[in-house]
Image (tube, rainbow, N blue to C red; front, side, top):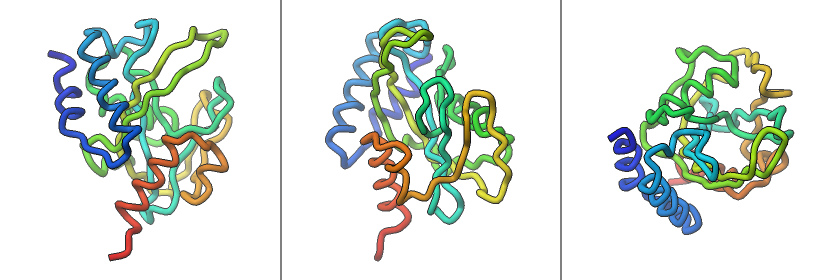
Length: 186
């Protein structure tokens, strides 16, 4: 029963990106196959949650230079057994940005993006996959962003420059979705 909410969200989710649609199907198969899909100790993979955080003008996104992985990413992290992936995303965003959760606005409780990415072996982890469920949030970019010890830096990145910080296809996809949602000309 604990997986049912996420399964229902994924079953109703639609994307115009074929690659992402295939990841949604694969994520559903993974969740059906693993009752403990939210447990980070599931060796070959687990469900994670992350946020695509926009400023009110919809011109910038919040990114973190991750200390352990030495790359720029959106806020997010492990569910650690919690099946309420939306609450995981809000908690991780607050922790990693250093901004109180009361200053974080959920723009939609619908899934914004789904991605599967490989975490390569490191001194901390064996190779495994993250089945990442992403939600759309807003934070006022006038607020100070203290960050936390997990990141070297936290910054508002112009959408037009996201690929200069991280050129992963999934980040490109979220930029495109943002442009389609908020910047399309009628």
